[in-house]
Length: 112
Image 1: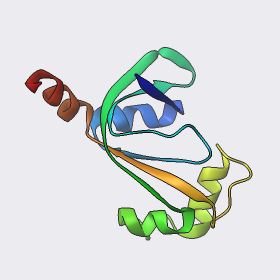
Image 2: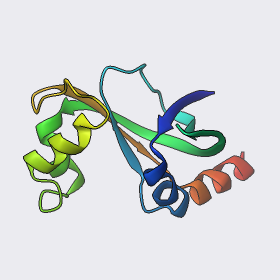
Image 3: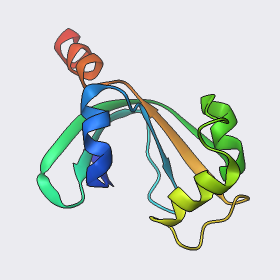
């Protein structure tokens, strides 16, 4: 199964269904289907979600795509992304990965 790591502070939001997307830069390509999101500080803490969409766009387009322009002005988004990717710029092409909540994913697995 494909997998990505998450910083620990984001795990509760994914688990609750409040976070249904992730932004990645220069990592392995992700495809639609099951994805294991693993807490980077505790490999036993993992969440399975179902990827529904993968878009490639510039970092400075992500906030508008997600309707979060007020929350994520360019400077805020860039600062947050540089925690993970120090060399990223606003013009960097990123993958915006959208997924179902864990509850929706579980339902999808039980229906198959």
